[in-house]
Every structure is written in C-alpha cells, then in structure tokens.
Amino acid sequence: TYVVTDNCINCKFTDCVEVCPVDCFYEGENTLVIHPDECIDCGVCEPECPADAIRPDTDAGMEPWVELNQKYAELWPVIVEKKDPMPDADDWNGKDGKLALLSV
Ligand code: SF4
Ligand code: F3S
Image (cartoon, rainbow, N blue to C red; front, side, top):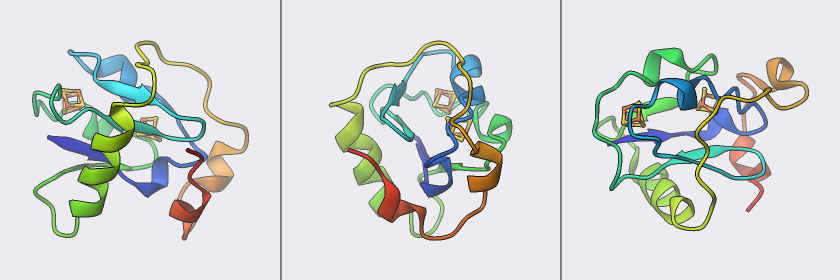
C-alpha cells in the first residue's frame, strides 16, 4: 500500500484524489490519508503530489505512517474529487515539524 506522510499537512493539494482509481483517500481537517485495505498499490498518486507526500509503505521508517493512515482512514470521510488546496499551501510545502500540527 501507499501512505500519505507529513508534508501533506496544511497543504492538501488533492491532486492525488483525482487520479486514484479506487477512491481510497480519506479527508481530515488538514491532511489526507490512504486506506491501506483499499489501496491497490498502483502507484499513480505518488508522482502527482506537489508536496511529494506519498510513499510506498516499503520505504524505510514508514511504520508510524502506516498506523496513522490506517487509523484515520476508518474515522474520516472519503474524498473523491479534487478541491482547492489549503490556504498558504505553497508556503507550508516542505516545512519541518508538521506532524505536530495534525488536526484530528
Ligand atoms: Fe490510489 Fe493507487 Fe495511490 Fe493506492 S497507490 S492510493 S490505489 S492511486
Ligand atoms: Fe496531500 Fe499531496 Fe494529496 S499534499 S492531498 S497527498 S496531492
């Protein structure tokens, strides 16, 4: 499966949503997550993210992100259409320490 990581926080560009063939993105207040049981591992979303926030779960150090995506995919609503990014998304893109800003 693929996972959304911290650089999505406060950006939420949603280009990923538009290309996912199985609509497995779920939306929180300031980030998205991927449902690991629904993702078919196609990989098409990864290069579409302007924030470079999507990774295969086989990358090193992804365990906390797998857990976070799994947890919130069960709690948040599905998102199936692209929408405007968050305000100041371009300024937030690439900032450090964004995990502390996650809204749940
Ligand atoms: Fe959707 Fe494919 Fe990305 Fe999984 S890897 S979230 S199925 S676009
Ligand atoms: Fe987030 Fe990138 Fe999608 S910023 S909403 S994972 S396009």
